[in-house]
Length: 303
Image (cartoon, rainbow, N blue to C red; front, side, top):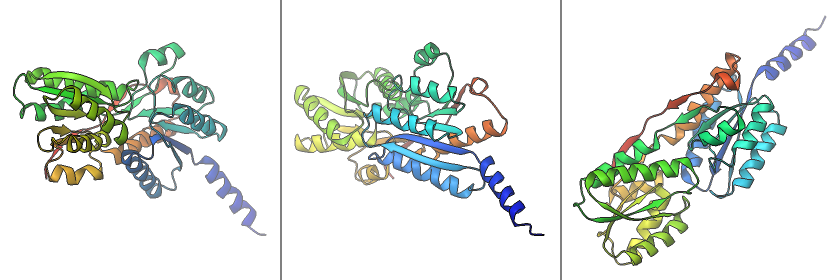
């Protein structure tokens, strides 16, 4: 008697038992999220017997509608679990509630979902990620030590409706207050190089005495550096960033960027995936997952 049919059945059963985890990120045009995706793919490759991974991202940091569609596609695909880096802290909440109602476990990374919006929809989503305010104060304090009391600085913020952008701005402001430095403007550079370049140019034009620009991510720091050069102020305006992407490293080395923050992007999705695999193994429900798992941040200066 052949054993093949029985073997095939058990193989199918093993496949059916292997959870499908979705990773939905922000803009893959941003090196930070590509690094995150690569980290997740490497983890899945090393744990191929444990789970399958579906990774997606949007083309533009502000394309919230596209990200909502991605989550809807994951619901239709019947994934078991979902890791989300939301483009908007409030707008993604209703579709994530739909996912949870469909029996999908959800974990939030990178940009924290809005607590009031979650409460309104009556569910919890655990957040796995760094304390952005702490990270921004860390790099802001480093800058503050190199500024004189009363000097003027500008803050180039990420997408203003996102929790991580707001927290980084607060951390920068904490550091500047502690240093006795005046913040003369806070404007959004939308997390992107071109937008930050435009904003930095306008800020430098409106406030010619600015001695530093504090940027909510490294992409915006790159845009700010270009604006500083165009304004003829190279070497006169200090710049700090956040993320420690590869593209910023030559700028740290030659001093165009004073410092940035490493929030270990390649590991952020992995931390989220691991927490979901644990929850699935323990047969947890969304309601019993809860809480915040804080991940590390580190100051990065000239090598």
